[in-house]
Image (spheres, rainbow over the protein chains, first blue to last red):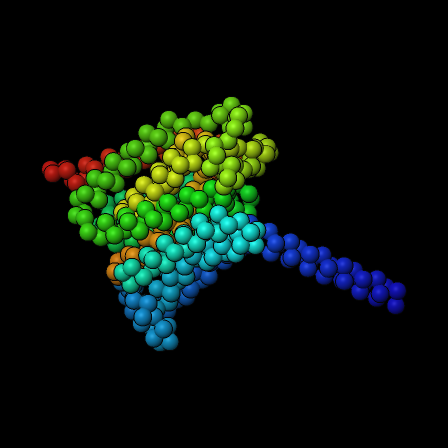
Length: 134
Length: 284
């Protein structure tokens, strides 16, 4: 009984420590940016590898042209290698955009108006280039 | 593209990832000549694919540098305003200029970077915090920062000099980046290190952080043109990401100045190869 209670207390303490670590991690902007950038590349690589698996399974040649974002949904639905390879590339391209958004949130939280303005300009430039020739 | 070609590209991208993360550049300086000269890829496809590689280098390496507090996030955001504007302008011009011009612009730029790298040498005196008042803009934007150096376990405080000049050079770096599909890092690193007096490792980390956003602004323009070859891009992403895992560890623990010189020689050779390959009567 005492051992069980001791064990429970140990578990509770571990959980509390874990929660503190998670909170500290989220509060630390550097850690969060680390996870976003890292996560973006890791997910992108995973999708690309899946694309190559599809190439091997369908026996089709490796695509040489990226498909336009408009027809991406259709391609993904039909599990074509083109679709998944393009999706992997697109996830990677969008990772820095998410990072900029994250910076924006952190500067808003800090109440740093100059940097909120600068981040907004950078974000506007990214959006401009996205729609410029699309 | 055959499987063999793709595997060779993945290995090249791996090496570009190591070099890119170690030196704060995107790795496009390796990948574009490699793709055009060795794999005979069309230069515009090579540029678009290289931009993807630059984003992979940036995300892979910058994540580690941000975690380890080498990156100056404020300085990066300040200069990103300039680089994204330049990046859009560069990509717009890049789609409309003849290929010959691209080769020459690239060759000249690489040679300039080689000279800049060979000249830079960071001394303890240079790294020490300088006395006196900070420039007004630096103070207002709180650009000065500290970084932790794992090589000698030291924490270094530094101040950012000449913020306006650095901003201007970053705009030019962004222009080149969009024009030629390189990260523009080898302009940003010397600009931060020599002009703004940011310590080498902090400059490398901050440059690595910025080039992803710069390249993304250009990639958005190239991607809808159908210039991104997904097979090539996939190999480049996978190779580069593996390389950055090694390159970041190398940078954090070593003296950057030693490898810089050998790297400058390599860059000079690449630049010459690019220039010579387009001269009439020369075949490489």
